[in-house]
Length: 216
Image 1 (tube, rainbow, N blue to C red):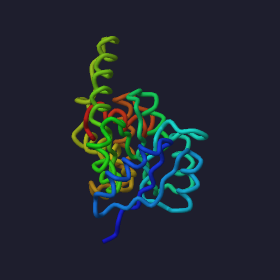
Image 2: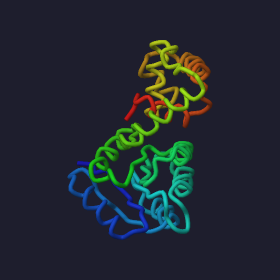
Image 3: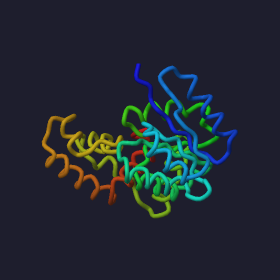
């Protein structure tokens, strides 16, 4: 059995030990290393070549988001799950922009960590349910304050399929394969749905999908 190789990065030793304990209870998961700061995480990612890195957002020397950016620049196939105490949309947007696969609240790690790792291993995104709920509520408040309505129902059935697949991390080519259409058709639908929803990049597509609970 091929095991999923995990690197754990957190500046608190007791947290790292707790995360390792949760992960190594699974027969198909192996923790191959631990890092106590962002620079060490980048170095060990290159040295150990893990499939997934579970990365604290607030670390000395180099924060988790900037460390993730460096890792993904060198190794785009590495999947990164950010650990955070914050539901702040700014942190989530920054994390999505650099390409992380998951955003997990520390206080839900005991329940959600293994699910997040399995989702990342399958190439999917994962966000703590509390984050999705907070973002959804904030989105509704923003719409109400501006006297606007959500535009999701303006999407065609095909556009709804495509936004979910894109939010799950698939490329235009992969979406085209799933739907048995051309990449050009996918790009056309992508452009139209982004215009309808006033979205400007992939990070915003994922963020919208989390708010709408299209993905978990």
